Image (cartoon, one colour):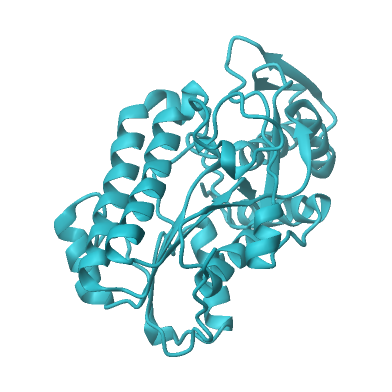
Length: 324
């Protein structure tokens, strides 16, 4: 497998879609530490560029003039949001990938890095998930439109690599968490949603909290700074869009996760389960052998350490005033 190293990011112009988001901010900090000049780092904001629209993608490329594009932007949410907006999540994520890759090809950029999703894996993929199994079945139904849209871009990048020589890379991170995450109850993922639920229950003196599903499903989580390191290493080392898993190294049942979060928050009330709500994918755990081999990457932050930092960040935000 060929790789095309970028010996130094210094002097490169880099556009980071979603660069103002949770993972994007961590990636941008790391790019600056790797030598990218502030003036060479372009972060398109949604208020200025609707990347689902081709004309706005063209305007973005005109403004950024990038050598490298790191595509992190996505429309995404937890199980509830996926149930309510499956059509929008498919369209938005498919449209962004389609236009960004095509115009990267037209402009002859040096590299395009795409961030996929663990939601792309089949519902009953063998554990741990290996990249070779990503097409061997249909994703879990509640997030399939989002997952299929994101992994369709894998195919596009492979086709563009073979036909046009577009250098690219694909990373597939598991669920992320950490300070700066999205804590909006309507759109947040499981860790920030549970941290907020437990913190608010503790403050209000609630006797119990109710969580979706049975608690039997398992998940794996990756600290945001570890994920950012994987993304940047893909920029530096890869030129073929073979999917590369980025995982945290620990599979945990949701029921155990809730207990750990409640303990980290100091919440002592009852934990109840609403089994009428879906569990989502039964299990998630990633094999990261390919990341170790191709990127020289593995996670560094222990889950308990990352969780404590996440809780402290949310407390500081809550103390500062209303926020989502």
